Image (cartoon, rainbow, N blue to C red; front, top):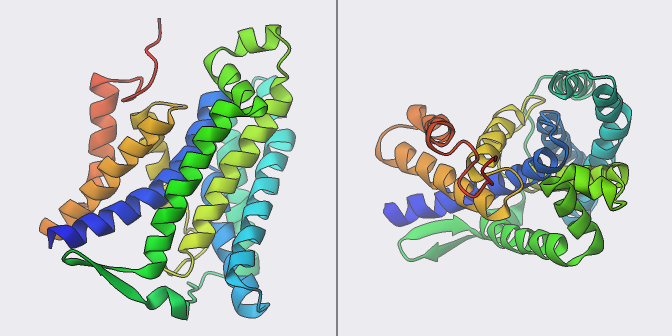
Length: 285
């Protein structure tokens, strides 16, 4: 039983990690709590569903479409909504909630209130690992998460724009002084962050039934993981996602699924009380 719970926990952790990584990049660089990513998560699931089931597009290409659309919408949100709001001294949080509600209601008009699902035949094949069983598709998602997280880490460490993103995150004023354009950096950050959310929403669409409110829960968990791990910290995001993902499944497996979500808020409260900057966050001077 423990091996099965552990496998389920690792899978949950991977989906949480991808969403939280996109959120922590945006919050760490732009100081914007982009709750609208919950809507993009949902929108990506619908896009992958529509492209694969009704248009007959290969599921891999359907995922690519979802990523591109999510990234495009994220950049447009930044240019049209967040940046003007911040320049006028308005709350970016209120703006993000407004975008979330607009996208959700538009999706409700287009897709309706019904749940959708499209289990793929290849996604049902299972493999045994020790005493636990996991589908091959979930294993692919776990491997994809490892590759994507490593690629993001390399990108931030080695690429020119990645170094600029880190510079803005660590010292916004200093980055401006040395000529790093915050507008360009913010667009790149939103593009990457929302692409990660789009990827996750599309990947899980064959596994879960989803409706227009599909992203509401996971975006809350993503923020909790980002804050617990430390804003802008990839390692902190990974560790926090593992704690919450495996913790949820341990509680669900040994106690009850009714209490599994409590672990998210317990971990968040402990972090806020004892390490408010996050597990791997930088302490404010």
